[in-house]
Image (cartoon, rainbow, N blue to C red):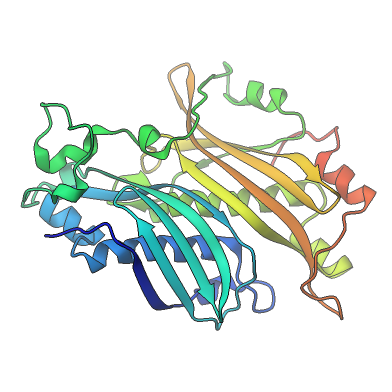
Length: 327
């Protein structure tokens, strides 16, 4: 198997039908899905797709960090071209359609031992271009050398573990430290996982969208309310999702989301942090940032950015919120 770290250009990617929730505009997570597909295509074009890495080498390919800017909108029927450079661990991705760049981003990939589910793997020698530098510890066979790095090391994120609050609500102290945050707990379902074991990166992308939706609803700014009353919809110009550690299927994740800044009465910058309680510690397993604004969805100004009035800014940042996610 030969892996060449050279640019990969592909055509014919299309956003999924699921992503067009308001009119025919595609939501931010489907931009991020397309960037993920472009990186996977880079591996497949070199004979090292996720399935082959799993079955032939006992390796699980995981995207652990993605940071994207979204300078233009994407329509449901657009055909997207991708340009991928770098690899095999860090990639730069550009997506374009109709001659317009719609995404610029960076993604990081880690290859880790797949464990028991891939016990039947051939364990063929790992392609040299996928070997880590510096070399793996001697205790690891060469074909599993990519497992030498932890997800936290590969993603390059800043991990901040916390002390769990005694009692039934281990994140009570965390919520108190971030006034106005929306906090809730959830169980990792199998359909957010990969390779039979752990939550995958795209699962956190979906959780980030869910976090924003829960936060806005709790603040009286539900998507339907703003759409019906003002013709406004939330839009995203920048997002980053970083995994900081493994979380297994059916573990409980405690998620905190808050708006940190309102920028020039146009955008609002939010942060999501995810924790898993292990003993007396809340392990910081994922973090994300997202820059939102509101776009006007109907009338002659459809597609332009709305200016936030004082009442909306107060709802996004005001005090007196009890921190509970509403159904």
